[in-house]
Length: 238
Image (cartoon, rainbow, N blue to C red):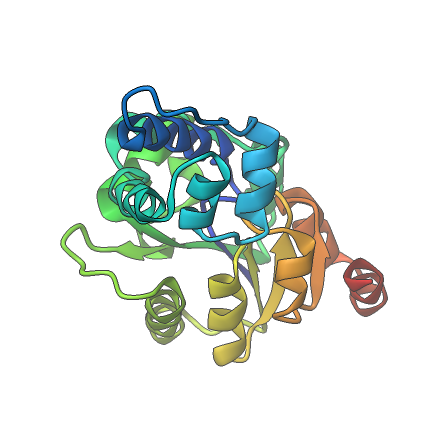
């Protein structure tokens, strides 16, 4: 059996609108009365976010001073995963078809492994009708009361738990959009594919040397199932 482990935000959900709305909210909250600001367009904001520009610098690029930039970053961290903004997430294009393709193949085992908490993951399942693709024993996420450390460390620990609990597979692939996905996979000897539909750009993902970088989940699945995987992967990384 071939196992595909996928992250949730990025490969499955497009989170760009949520992140931009939180950016707008935090900018408004931190702004001094009558302080002139230059709000970034969504495209410019998302380009900076995908290039891993620090939050404080994004705030300062918008006209905040250094101290405000730090405030902006702290407020964003408190706000970004809250219920009022999670509703702005949308299914990434082609995701339903890609998940259905895996679901219909008896030789594929699909697992989701995400930094979302239990309530956040299952709320999204309900909103986007995804429950049928991910049985409870194929869902790995953070407990609601889990105290987060770093995404890289938390995701690596979650991957370790998944490997220990899941039945053996002949081949395992991780599909993700961040360095945490790439590092967690490689720390456990799992091949990784980076997708550009999420929060990191090609230049940033390339630093972590995934087997391939593709545009989205659908392309990742096609690549995993391709008999000429190694050749295509080399092309994708160029």
